[in-house]
Each structure stands twice: as C-alpha cells, then as structure tokens.
Length: 128
Image 1 (tube, rainbow, N blue to C red):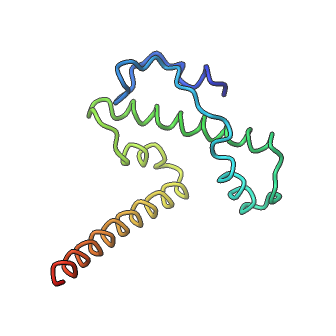
Image 2 (tube, one colour):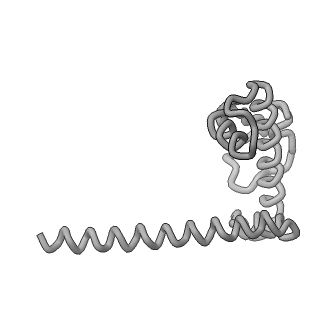
C-alpha cells in the first residue's frame, strides 16, 4: 500500500480532526526493530533483508488500517470506537479472538495491579 492509498476513502472517520483530508502519511521503517524481532521469533533470520521487513510492514499497516476503518464504520452509530468493535470483526477467527481477549484481560489485571500499588504507596507516604 502506498501513502496515497492509506487514506483514500472519502468517508468521514469517527474522531478524525476537522482538517483531516485522508492524506495522513506513515513513516516507513518505523516498526523495523519490532518486526525484526517478531520475524526472528517466527523462524526467520536474525537479520532479515530490509526489503522483506518493509514489505511485511506494509502488509501489517494495510491490515491494521483496514481493520480500523471497518471498526469505525461499525462504531459510527454509537459515535465512539471501542475494543468490542475489533472483537466483533475478528469473531470468526478463533485464535485471534482468543489472543485478543487474553491480552485485554491481562491489560485489565495490570491496570488493577498498578492502581493497588499506587494506593499502597500513598498509604505508606501518609504514614511518614
């Protein structure tokens, strides 16, 4: 996907700034290190070809952009985008759905643990 295709839809997007013209550009290579580690974790060479990483990044960016646009279309009736909109889109892909629900619940647990830790720190600080 080239940069002119990134926002070629003429639909207004939920939460888009008023000056949004659909031509938001993405920096290529921004996720290079992350992709390199992920590709190695899935069995690729520790130092994959630059062209391969750029191709994978383009594919991932196109997939994510497409999913966000579809989720926004679902969310337009409600007026705000929620995680449930993405879960709805992947509901038929059970491995993805399971992993997403696992990550969301883990994120919630981490939030609660941070909150509990902050409360304990506040109690300790007030005793001093």
